[in-house]
Amino acid sequence: MGMFDTIKDKIYCPYCGKLSEENEYQTKDLSCSLDGWTISDIIQFVQPNIVNKITIYNECSNCKKWIEIVLDIKRNVKHFMGKK
Ligand SMILES: [Zn+2]
Image 1 (cartoon, helix red, strand yellow):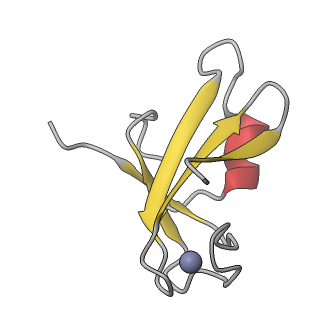
Image 2 (cartoon, helix red, strand yellow; image 1 turned 135 degrees about the vertical axis):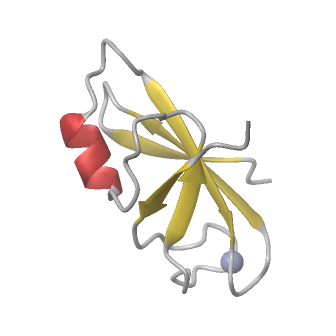
Image 3 (cartoon, protein in one colour; image 1 turned 180 degrees about the horizontal axis):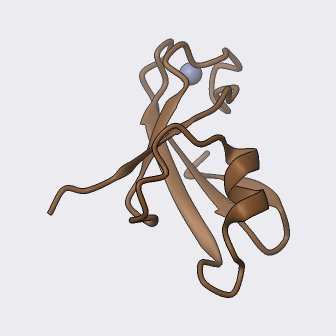
């Protein structure tokens, strides 16, 4: 029902290369009130056997493109999704 967590991190937009000003990304893949966590926190503390992958998203404050990032907890990598 519209619940999500807010992830705070600095991510360079894969489209325009600028650092997103808001630095806030949302995810619905965590439901444990992890508001304000960074990507490093998630990769460090989320158990890979509980959650494998987390999708976070936001709109770029510069180019307004939709940025979607999949965090692969097990392999400790970020994948930008949807880049053409
Ligand atoms: Zn951008």
